[in-house]
Length: 413
Image (cartoon, rainbow, N blue to C red):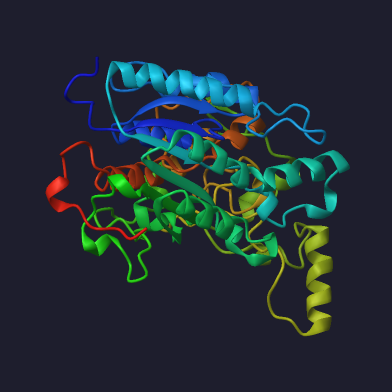
C-alpha cells in the first residue's frame, strides 16, 4: 500500500514516452508513473532506470504500437495496448486509489517542415501514420476515462495547414466530458534554461473538476498557465557552467553522459574563431565560411535581402541567456547554436549539458553507447520541469473524494 506521503499524486500512463522526460517530471510532482508506452524499444533501458516512484517502484515500459491494426499498419497493437493498460491500472488502483493522468506527447516530426524534401517513401508513410496518433488517442481516453489529461507538442501543430489535428483533438476530448484548455507556451517562462515554444493541452473530467472560478475562461475553457510565477529565468551559464570542462571527443570519467562529439579540423578552426553568441556571419569572406552559406548570402545580396538563412549554425551559445531549442542534433556544432559558450572549450554541447538545458536532473542516465541516439533521446524529450509544473497544476483542480468538495465550481456540459 502507498504511504500517506505519496497518495496525493496521480497514477500516470505516459503515451509515446520516449526516454521519459515527461515521466520524470511527473515523478518529481509526486506521481506514480505506472507505465510508459513507445514503439521504439531503444528507449526501454533509459526509461525504466530513471522513473521509479518515491517508494522505488519502477515504471513499466510497454513496447507497443498504439495504432489499430490495419492493412496500412499491420503492426498496430491497439488491442494489446488496451489490455495491458487495463491490467496495470487495475493492479495499481487495487493497492491504493488515486486519480489517473494520461500524458500524450506524440512525435512532432509530422508538424514541422525540417527535411521534408529528403524523406523516403517509408518515412513519408510513417509520418502520415504519426499525424493520426492524436486522433486515435481519443479511443484510449474514451475507454479508460482518466481524471486528467496532459498533451504536449510543437507550437506549429496548431497551424490549420496540418488539417486541424490539434483542434480536432481538443474538441474530441471536450466531447468526452472534459473541461479542456490549450495554449502555446515558452519553456523559458518556467525556469527552464531554454527557449522552446510548445503547444500544451490540459483537461480534467467534468465530474471531478474542483478548480476555482479563476481557472475557467469566460467561454468555459480551462485556463492553461503560460508562466510559472515562482520560477526564476535561467541562463545557460547557470544550468551548465558548473560542469567540468571537456575537450571534443572526450567523456568525463565520473559521468558517462558528460561526453562530447569529435569535431573535424575545419570545425575546430571555426570554433576557435567563434565568439560567445553572435551568428556565423563572422566567417563571411574567410576560408571558414561554409559553402552553402556563401551561396545563400550571394543570392540574398542579389535579391536585396538583409537577413535569412541558417545564421545560428556553427555558432556558440550566449552564456547569460536561455539556450535555443535543444534538438536531436544538439551534439553537433554544425546543426545549430550548439557550441559551448566557454571559448576555452572548442566543442559542441555534451549530452549531460543538453540534458541540463532540457531540465533533466543531473543523475538521469541515457543508456546507449551511441552519442547520436542519446542526443535523440534528449532532443525529443518533454522538458521534465514543464511536465512537473502542469502535473502539479492538474493535481490542484482534480477532486480526490471530498478533498476539495467545498470549492467545487459548476462546469456546464
